[in-house]
Image 1: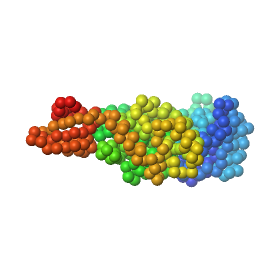
Image 2: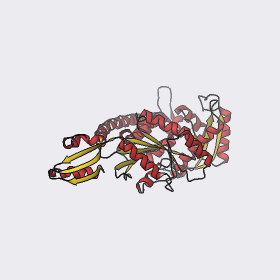
Image 3: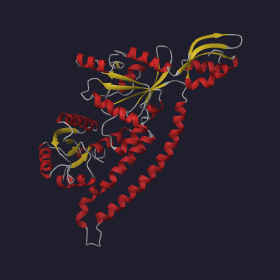
Image 4: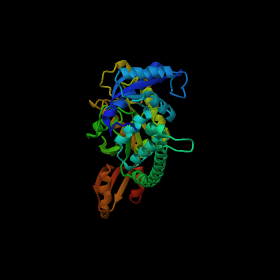
Amino acid sequence: MIEVREKPKLVERAFLVGITSPEQTDEHTELLLDELASLVETLEIGVNGRTVIHLSKPQPKLMVGKGKAEEILAEARALDCDVIIFDQELSPSQQRNWERMAEKFLVIDRQEIILDIFGERASTKEARLQIELARMEYSLPRLRRAWTHLGRQRGGVMQRGEGETQLEVDQRLVRKRIQRMRAQLEIVRRQRETQRKRRRSLPVPTGAIVGYTNAGKSSLLNALTESDVLAEDKLFATLDPTSRRLSLPNGQNLVLTDTVGFVRNLPHRLVEAFKATLEEAVVSDFLLHVVDVRSAELEEHKETTESVLEELHALDKPTVLVFNKIDGEVDPATISYWRSRYPEAHFVSARTGEGLGALKERMVDLVQQGIRPMKLLIPHDRYDLVHFLHEIGAVDKESYEDEGVLIRGNIPEKQVARVTDFALAGT
């Protein structure tokens, strides 16, 4: 991986390279480079320059032609950069060819940047294991980079040099480590399945906030629940799920969870780690899909989120589309356009609170879809159950009778079996 943590002074100034294929426009490539710049800055690496290359098809040796590669190197040197970062994935051989040609430059791709960000931010055991496994699988075919300085030490055809021997040792160690991590992950997965069953039996309804990274999900959670979850204007500010309790206008309690932000071109090796952080989206009763109304790529971000939800088999859950950040410098015509296109969506400002009341009422409707109105007569020796129903906000009316406690309320469907024995006729 890049030496940004262990040796921070080795990587300080980046030069970004975007590739425009015949199927896309320069504008689209520039927007992708803007996102790459944000990812790079998240690692506290400065961006000194960038360029967009038009390419009809990738070249096997360097991704681009040799002449164009020399132009990129010259521009990066002129801007005093020390790392060149491609927005497209480089193959191991392309990376080696680049670094052989670039000499003192480090040449990496978007995938390596995202791996480093996830490596810094993950805190759950499974996420850390998944990311470390992704790192090892990414590094294995690239180990040769570390030993090119010993390449001239090889002897004859039958004689191996020091560099080649060390490379083989390293590859063997990495393969063993990969095997160990896969075994550990299998144990963690079994534990997670048990935890998932427990979460499905939670006594209160659950909702999850999903959306593209930096859409304002954490800010929305803070505004709705009056909490102080970390909310920063940068990509992947939140990587592990955070849950808070929300009391809805009808008195019903709800557990609302903020999840990791989605991103385009997520490295394939990280997909499983990414899914591990989205467990709450899988088991929640409904989703709030947050988009940034100010984003020039709102539709693309929305589609990226939906494609990942489909992979998680969560796309069919009841979902509310929430347009956030309407308090910013947004053209009213833009908001009118999105309102007409998505009439069922909610338009809010997590910063000012505008629209949050209507959003809470919508959540009331969603929760009530999963509850059953019931009339219960609970014996006096079961006050534990009465207390439980109050805890989950399921009690509308309560009176004390000779035979027990008479309760009228809205019982979550997943808790109906717990009180069925005390239901009165007609409920």
